[in-house]
Amino acid sequence: LHTSCPGACAIIDQGNDHADVRPDAPDGVGGNHWFRFLVGVSAHAEPRVLHLHWPEDQAAHDAAYGGNHNFATVLDRCCFLDHGDGRWFRVKDVVLEGQQATITVPAGGDRRRLAVGMPVTAIDLHRLLDMAHNAPSASVRRLGHASRGSPVWGVTIAEGDQAIGTIVLQALQHASEWAGLRIMETLMRHLLSAAGAPLRRRWRWLCYPATNADGLYMGWRGDPALVDDRNPNRDWGTFALSETRAVADDLLDQLAAGPPLAHALDLHMGWNWRDDPGSAVGVCTPASAPGALPSTIRDWHEHCASALCRDLDFTRHLWPVHQVDRPTFPGWLHRSTGLHGQTIEISRHLWPDGDVMVPPDQAREEALGPALANCLDAFLQAHPWDPQ
Image 1 (cartoon, rainbow, N blue to C red):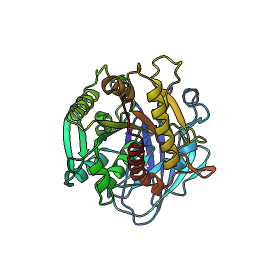
Image 2 (cartoon, rainbow, N blue to C red; image 1 turned 45 degrees about the horizontal axis):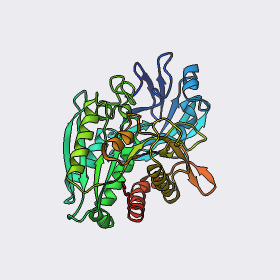
Image 3 (cartoon, rainbow, N blue to C red; image 1 turned 90 degrees about the horizontal axis):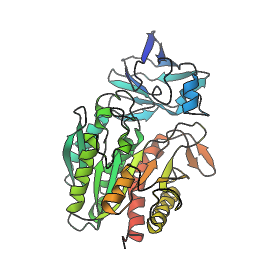
Image 4 (cartoon, one colour; image 1 turned 90 degrees about the vertical axis):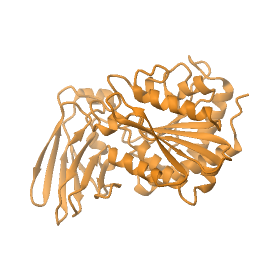
């Protein structure tokens, strides 16, 4: 059992054709710390029914995520199965009834994993790194180590010496925000394919797939949004954490060697409300807010965010969060380079489909990576950033 909640456990009662799983969290645990866990699935020759009984509501949970009350309300969108080949698939036809979700696990071997809310591990990261190792247009760098010793990795994808700019992508600042790594993998796979050849010739792509390496390698130890009581997304410029320092140093070294930075995206997970998609593209705070960015940067980034919302069809939300004086990745990037990066929050719950919101679909999730690469390519060609 892997879980992000300190002191949590799961009571598992197995029969021949079913299993009951009862996660249990200590009193007073709130927020989303107890929302995620992963278990191994034993081999069985017939389908097995899994009953997942979620803990009863606590006031702390409701206070941290008002309107959601309990993670049981979104279990039908957060269950994933790895059939033993290292690839996660969303479990379909999950039935919710009160605090219980019923899942039918198909017959299969003993290398499978069932994830509730967090379908990534170091196995998934190394599959991405192996793909890059085996590609002539990619290079893999070990940048250093995180605070507890886990390796921090960087990947460069480029072909030839005609790149007109550098595009930066970062994921897993918070180890629980698994969508970033999944999107990073499909985006990189596209860049390394025949269809991605024009993109890897036109741009140099710097990919940092798991900044919070300890959180991923060590099974989401403690609160996966924090490292030694520090939020990695509030450590940029402070650099109390060796993992953020390693990424920052490598990024600046790579940019010094050229070509110049064209844009940067920081991939996060999304929020936890059942009836809101929770996905958004970050834009700059209003001019009247403390730490506001110059109007030229605000206008350019809002234009970029609008293009991402329009062309990617994964969100309709613009999220005014970025400012210079916050120690976040976009704020540090502006102070260091003059170009302000953006955050993307990717929902796990609802996606737009015309005028309605629908549950996520595996194919749409996997298609977001290539679509993101193509959208950035088109936008940056049409609207190159001019620091003047």
